[in-house]
Length: 253
Image 1 (cartoon, rainbow, N blue to C red):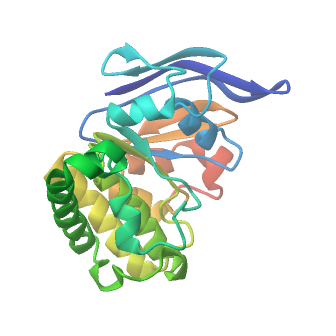
Image 2 (spheres, rainbow, N blue to C red; image 1 turned 180 degrees about the horizontal axis):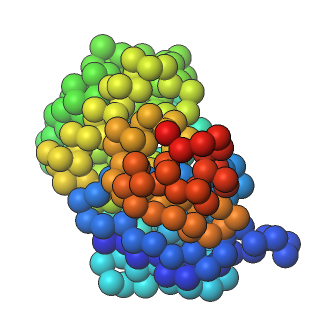
């Protein structure tokens, strides 16, 4: 589905991503791990159009989309979440989800005046979709709570919920487990697994929690110094001497 082909990106002479290549297969939950500064988030920003690479290609279903703006990739089903959630803190959880779908009739002044019945019909459909997302993520009990007042873990679930309000086909998750307590982390992991198995989502996941990576991800890709140094299943990766030296530390488990 996504092919990262020889991508490079430098900032002020420092190579953040250096000749990086790998694939995210359709229907997979692909893990992307490595030490801080390995270039993982920079690569996510390139794949999702927030940064242009200096060289290389990003293929989405065979089309080179390197440098294509995020809003265009959004309409092609490629979306991402961020390590720090970006909720609208003064709006409720439900309202945050309602905002997501593009092209809502109520955004058009003429349609609001002349086709009010159609606007209300679409709004009812969106509310049904929001209720489905809230129930799926076990957030229905805080639907009317201001998003700024919910916990960090609940904000991560809300970020995931926002992707469910789109026509997402492939979702890039940037450290979904960071700062999330173990109870909500289990809910988050279950939601990702169900979205993958039941609704056909493809995921690429940056994560430092190795228990979560082991639970969710196959294959696992390891980056260090801007390049891919290893890839394979988790058991193979954790025994790779180069990975142990660059990231995991200690001795093979």
